[in-house]
Length: 245
Ligand code: HEM
Image 1 (tube, rainbow, N blue to C red):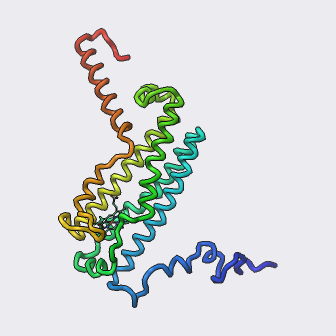
Image 2 (image 1 turned 45 degrees about the vertical axis):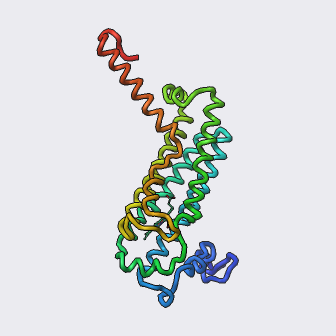
Image 3 (image 1 turned 180 degrees about the horizontal axis):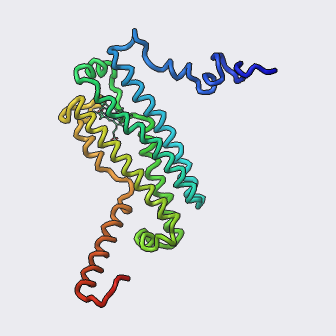
């Protein structure tokens, strides 16, 4: 009988788990104790590396969502987007882990970062890149349906698939804002809000970037709907016989 404990996948690690997940390579990506400038450096590296992995995974799913929207498979697009949003949660919740590093200790680690900066984060850049592509794919479907965004919101039950994509796009926009807000607080807390980062960017710029929105039109349509509702209410108050419609 075959020994089920023996690895059968290609590789040199002891088990198939390690061979498939490539744990040997993965767990060798952090500095050894002897290489660390400070014992907190492992936490610093682990938080960054796991965030990069998860953002890579999220951007991949969002890329697939672009293709699904383009193919008119809106249900699958929102499913993939929801998966990506879930994958973005850990990077967000990991940021406060770094707030447990004391500012003086952080400067010991920071001295070894060179010009390394989150501005060059491949994972975050991939998310910033896919955001507008998702918006363009969505806009193309709106145009194809021959309606405006505000019309789609008014007839949301009829255009459920597009409405669901629009709301999930907003979830993504909000999540990026949350990430940037949490990250801004982390930077303010660890190095201060009035200084310059490792790539020469003032921390204040992080504050400005936090205001950025991918889907302004989707935020704007809320104002239009509320303005419309207020007008209806005023009209109804002036003429009680005029019921809601
Ligand atoms: C001690 C922890 C951290 C500090 C003090 C810090 C500080 C900063 C600063 C000052 C900047 C501005 C650019 C520059 O460096 O000149 C920046 C940008 C950035 N950092 Fe961090 N960071 C920290 C942790 C993280 C972590 C864990 C991530 C997750 C991957 C991250 C992702 C980013 C991103 C994506 C940007 C670009 C921001 C944007 O486009 O809005 N940072 N960081």
